[in-house]
Length: 408
Image (cartoon, one colour):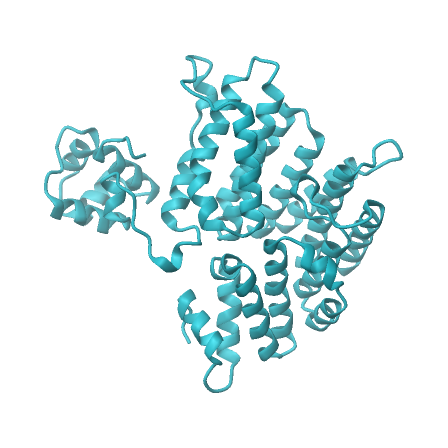
């Protein structure tokens, strides 16, 4: 959006705020005609006081309207802030693939360069560097979309589609972490269509996993369960097809289904799906990161804890946590481990052990601060911990609450 005239930026943000020109004009104390002329570039905005007033009405940083980089507060450096969400949204709203039917796409990075960028983005996500990822995602989305369009009629079409499908999945996962569930679902849904063009069943299976996760976050739990189990059944390993990639994607779909089943209190289905995932992990023979899944026996145990928490059975979650193999756990990437600490903090709150819940939050924060400080769920857990703490909270928890903006 930086290259757009200021009037176009005003129109964009007015649209994002779902304001009509008349409503926007009323709030500014201007006429609808004045707004229309500004947005079309007929009338110049040459008074900073007016620009600041517009930014205030639209609830955006004035630097956004001026097309400049926004100065972010230090405490949000590692999170995805609203500015970055809107930039990712703008990248998702592009339809360059359609434009390619009518004119050539001007530029696309070479595919080997794209592969390196996509791999780096996956690792950035799995190390819970969400702020870093957010600042690279808009350009990565645009580049992957351009590559997909450029190579649409070439032998490289499946490879380009594969990369774009991965970028959509990275975006979906990151957006879900920070509570942007509708956008997360959109990115995941895009990945399904692109994955089919890539001709990769496993990539499509992972896209279904992202769709299931987004639907669950949206409260659409039964569709989340259905899509996870249906696609898992279609990818079920056989004697001929039982490689590590397939076992990992299959197992993650079962785990996602178990989480959805737990959300609706279906403990029997939870047990069945966890049993299937455990069998897949045994066949896999260890913890691996095939297709960026971090799937294996340890991750299955982490999901046993998470599903128990979803079922409201904090005691089982804590008991399972205490039996987890520490060597396998420490080998997992930071996002997965910190996510688990957040789950177990919830488990401890369910059994009334607020001191241990605090300890788990602090462990997660030390390991991967963004996983704790950036997630709405973590804010809820910390608020619960503070509310139930007798007397003054311990200094580390009080400090974390202050840094997260959670009232003590």
